[in-house]
Image (tube, rainbow, N blue to C red):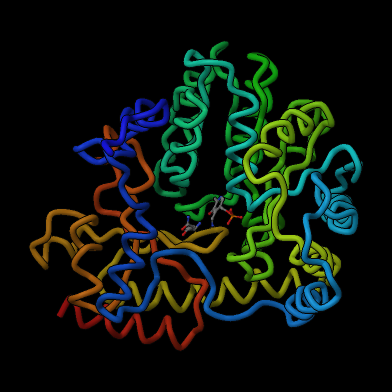
Length: 404
Ligand code: PMP
Ligand code: GLN
């Protein structure tokens, strides 16, 4: 039977998410991970750790499975996880969150984002402002919700937005300002001034602030500062996070959204028709993780910072110009010189030949921008540092051979 395009297809075509024949294209992560497998390459593309997280968290999931925690959990999430999320927000940020009314557990941060946008978008005239480059699911979820994506560029050297660009982007049509901090793919941590401006603009134009803080515990040499810590922002801010990065359990897909009860209820109204509930035995396990001591959380960031250093040294030796990250899984590097030397057009072409030629996979930054802005990021490559040090060293040695 011939597939008849639905509403998603119309929206997705505009966002560059469909192939020339109108059919879906695989995500860049699926594409590059498949190339890595095909060529036996080290995968520094898709961001997932290659080591397990804390044993007590894994053990708690096993215990939940062994003791019958295998049926549908409550719609808002298990009470122990909701309590743990509330305590986490108070302990790290001093943000009060009512575990019964202001928390919703979701199938990863991805479902939280999708349900939030579907809940808040009213129609095709609504706009969602994002910083560009953006995590690829943002454009897809905005398209699913049938809104318009408005982008504010993050510029080198430190990938902060220009205040005038931000002010121009936010208007009375803006329904949501979607802020990812720490930022994937650039590794930026947004300045207090930028966050203040987001809050001012959201208030002036009556927009909802949605934050994606999945890398909240992976900030280097500083502590994470959520927008919701500002009291004046709280009534209009939905904060999204996930256990995937913090506990190295990206496959468990336990995420959450916290914020004012009315907004959380609106997200729940959509989420219940998407997955209804998810990850029964994994929810109490993530609750155990959120209660771990401060040493665990501090160790996460410092271990990852060290890995970024090893990766940066390897990339520099291989001819990349590294832009050091301030948070998150990824290091961005400029491959302009390397592309010239190898005679390839841009980072996209380089990333497509790297798995076969060098035995290393990575992601071109053009995967995170709208089609019309690709040129601005054409020579940049994203490398995941959340891998064992010996794996990063082996990848570095392979990349060094590429440029010789
Ligand atoms: N937001 C960002 C910025 C991410 O990098 C990711 C994936 N790593 C997600 C959301 C998705 O998180 P989850 O796996 O919890 O759905
Ligand atoms: N968030 C991960 C990354 O940026 C990938 C998750 C996915 O494959 N959708 O690499």
